[in-house]
Each structure stands twice: as structure tokens, then as C-alpha cells.
Length: 515
Image 1: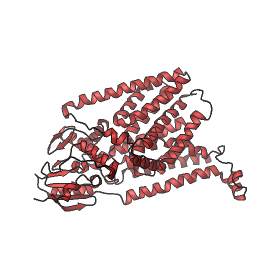
Image 2: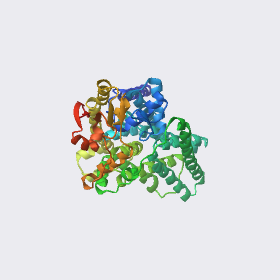
Image 3: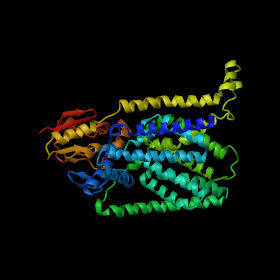
Image 4: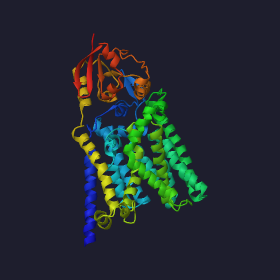
């Protein structure tokens, strides 16, 4: 009877958790967080693909090549959502929410397979209750039209299938290869870290001459590379009749991938301090998997899977601290996947057989004796760690949902669509405004964003010239949002008096040309 009652409570708790997660992921979907620059390009391309049959952007009312939007494997799903549900913000963001639910379901399953159910539960606690930045919380990231959650869903699905290929049936290898290839196509940023996740266990199997694992890892690696290339070629063939060739951008490596500037490195290190639970969890898992005992090879597919995730998270964190431009968003994938090692650490802390300290040596007092005999100090420590990190996370979510809801982009676009002449030309680099406009608009070439990021990185130490004339298209209006304000693209032309401010909607300023 007691077991039945306990099972009922667990099921009730699971249902409550899912309902709460669905509510948190969908309420105010169109305004929390505020629509922004990275989303706008993908939404615009998807909109034009659905409405005009053209995969690209509009520039002064004419077709323009794609450029800064997410990959086809993201934009295509957004376009499909538009086709079924209509064009709109929540319709586009719904795609990320669905991939988020798929990602956490697969991730929970993987945590249970590689460890146990308690680690799976604590992984979800670490994933949802301990992120310290909005760019690290999976729910807030899912509510945006970005490639991270679709990428993680595909890569983690590939890991699950590969585990099944090693432990049950080798034919699951084909599913793993397809999932990995889709994930790598979704965000090219993941390629070096996925490569590390394959090469680390491969090197260990070669060292220990475990050919039964070395062969499938090698095969999976090679087939995934070939499949990824095939997806790229297939995309070009599918889109060729519906798009224009993109010119691309140069210098993106120097502002995103390898940034040796000392100030940037210090900023990345400061941000990484908030990843302390993940870093400690990775170090603990590395010690447990490869150092605690003399390494003698993998005992089963579980150990292979653990080392694969260690390679992925460890290499990504290393790059972020020592090479990236320090933006918190680029640490989201290792924060997400690294939650499994935080869950494992918390689980071990709650195990009565696990001892971090010799509490009796710390202080011989009745209080310490009471903790040691009744409350289990390590378990108390684990709960305190969760609470310490969960409090600022809760505050962050409260701020986002109750004070961060922002529809100013919609209001600014509605003003332009209803209060300006039909033949007006609008200059704006805020892509979310472009997505919502029904007027002709002009924007700078894609290469400009590289110069703007470089200027933001080096700051006042070095002048980075921005060679762009906002008056090139002879615009009647200028719209400047928060993201572009921070990059100061239009500051020079505004200071000349060429435009006068006529309306403001929270973070968006609308200027009219002074003629």
C-alpha cells in the first residue's frame, strides 16, 4: 500500500513538473524575452519563403541573398510552422520550444542510461534551477528563434542512438549518424567539440586495443562527416531555384572563434566563474572515469558514452575560457550538457557512502556529531549548493517573465506600417523590425556586423572604422533598436542632424529624415 502511494506521488509530481514546464515555455511566448536581432534574420527568411517562395531577404523591396539567418535545418522548421499556423512571432518561437522538450527528454533518458534515475532527476534540477545567466537557461533559450536547442536535440539524439548501437544493435549507428549530421549542419560551431567527443574515446580504445569499440567509433565519425557534407549539397540543390548566391562574410573567425585580447580573456574567465558547478562536475567526472583507477579500457558502452560527453563539454569549456569572445550565450551548450555531471556530483554527495570531509576532524562538537549521525552533512551540502544557485536563477526568471516582457518591436513596426506613406523607405539594421515591416527597407551589408563586433571587443583602445553611409538609399525614416544602439552604428549620422526623433517605443527610436 505504501509503495503504491509512493508511486502515485511520483507520477503526480512528474505530471506537475511537465505541466509547469509547458506553462513556463509558452506563456507570453511573443514577448518574453524581447524579440531581437539574431531572431529577426531567420524569421524574415522563413516569412519570405512562405509568402513569396523565395529563400532569402528583401532589400528595398527586391530579392536579396540569405546571409545571417540560422541554418536551413532551423529556418525550414520555422517556415513550416508559418505555413501551418500563420506568420507571427509565437509561431516562429514555437519551433524552439518543441525542440527544447525533445532535447530535455532525450537528455534525461541519456542520463538514466549512463548513470541512474536519481542522476537523471538531479540533472534536470541542475539544468533548470542552477543557470546564472538568461543565455544559459534552456527555457529562455528555447523561447527564441535560435539554433542551439535544435542542435542539442540532434546531437543528444545521436548520442542515444550511438549508445544503443554499442550496447544492443549496430544498426542504430545509421540513426546516430543522421542525427549527428543534422546537429552539425544546424550549427557549425559544434563541429570541433563533437570531433573532440569522438576522438577522445577513440584514442582511449586504440590505446587499450579495444577494437570492438574502436571500429564503430571510427565508422560513426567518418560516416557523420560524409553525411554532413551530403546534407550541405542536398540543401544547395533544393534551394537553388528559390534563392540567390550569398556573398558571405570574412573575419568572423577573428571576432568569435579566436580572440586573444587580454580584456576579453578576463571577461570570459569572469563569466566562467558562474559555471563553477559545471566545471567542478566535469573535473569530478573526469577523475572518476579516467584517473581514479589505472585506466585499463572501457568496460561497457556506458563508459564510452560518459567519455564522449566529457570530451564534448570539456573541449567547449576550454575554448570558451581561452579563446572565445566571452559572450555568455556561447557557453550555453556546455552548460546544458554539463548538467549531467553536476547531477552525478549531487547524487554522490547525497550518498551516505560518499564522504567529502572527515567531519569529526573538523570539529569535535555536539552539533557536528548530530549532523554526522542524523542529517548526513554531505546531503545537506548538496541541498545548500542547489539552493545557493537556485535563488538567483529564480529571481532571474521572475524578472524575465514579470518585468522583461516587451512588445516594443511590434509597436514600432505597427507605427511604421500605419503612420508612414506606403512608398516610404526605412533604414534599419534591426532585423526583427524588418520581419514585421510591410514597407520598403534598407540595411547595411552583412560584413558590417563583423566590424561592429570587432569595435565592441577592442573598445576605445583601438579605432575600428565603419565604412557605411546610412543615407545611401535616401531613406525617409530610420529605426534604431537596443542592439544596434549598443553597437553605435547610426550615432554619427544622427549627430549630423540628418534625422529628427519623432517617436519612441521603449528600446526603439524612430527618426524622420530632415529635408
